[in-house]
Length: 123
Image (cartoon, rainbow, N blue to C red; front, side, top):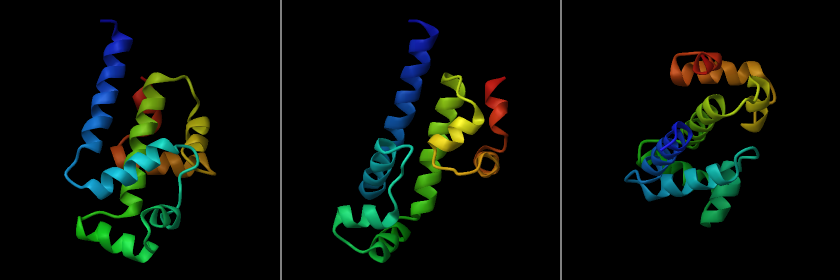
């Protein structure tokens, strides 16, 4: 297998493992976020999809030990890593694709998620 194919398969496996975590609700939300990368839905939109209020959705997420922001950041982090490793997109373009209006906010977020700046994955 080529290195590119191996990298793609590894990325797919990582996403599948994420989506196969024990909490169905979190999986469904992450799936919605992955499917709408670039224009992520709000918690209100997702709550409407599930037929509940955003407050109820927040409570349900708290019950399983997470929050909407945590799930959104996990998806953003995984997508950012994919873009950094497998594309030539600039950090500014990646920030925009992940819904950031300012690349410096993306850089700060990425460093808090991974402990490294985005450029470190490109080396």
